[in-house]
Amino acid sequence: MGKSNMAEVLSDGLILPALVLATMAFFVPRLLALALPEGVAPLLANAFLSTVFLIVLSGIFFWCLYIWQGLQVAQLTNQGVAVNVVYFGQLGLISAIIWAPIMILSVAGLPRKWVHRTW
Image 1 (cartoon, helix red, strand yellow):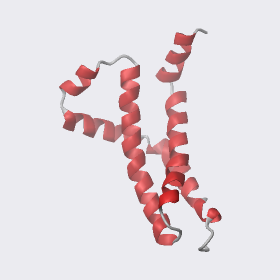
Image 2 (spheres, helix red, strand yellow):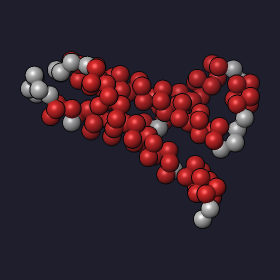
Image 3 (cartoon, one colour):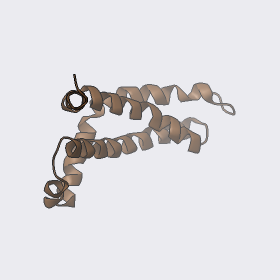
């Protein structure tokens, strides 16, 4: 299997998107936890912000995946910004079936690392 064949297998299938989405879902809440204080309210804020960021990041990832698979940027921008935002936003939201369970587990594991507060 050549280098280009491997890229086709990864981008045409579900392997690469699932791995990228799962990785983002694990690390986004943990990165946000570095900026947020400890406590239940910040934990809930982390879950909300992680959800919003993951929808946006997933949409951007799918946009990049379309470009990687050969779609011209001009074809995407031809339809207008609003159409692209809605379409790729929907893809990001639909992909929650992959990233949401991992994000929830990542957020749920954050209180174990708290130093000043207890759960």
